[in-house]
Length: 154
Image 1 (cartoon, helix red, strand yellow):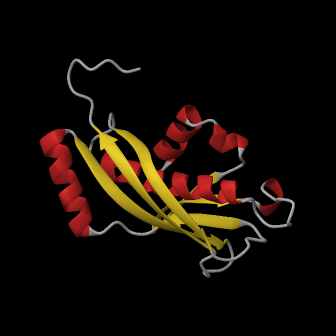
Image 2 (cartoon, rainbow, N blue to C red):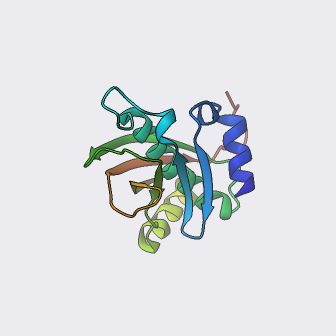
């Protein structure tokens, strides 16, 4: 997980500016945020901050999946997302991606191996750090691309 944290610090600097921390729990990476850093005019956490945390947690789950397969040069990007805000977030919060299913990941890697590109749908939730009640739900589609020999990195 240290490699993931270092990668994020080097390549996604807004994460540190937003005060997010990556937590390497046994259920996979999650993103921790503090209430005081993301409060809005209604004394709850700003929806944009929650959306960012959900994207990052889901992206980290996909990146961890491909890196664990040895694909360290793969590019992981989000293509689309939806977020349902269920209840106000009024304390420190956690965004965590749901476990990726074996069937989906098997299909994903088959496409990635065959075409050098694959798509994966990831679900995630926001809870308060000290509770398990779902306060926001996320679904995002991520695309992973393996660079081909001769491709120029931009």
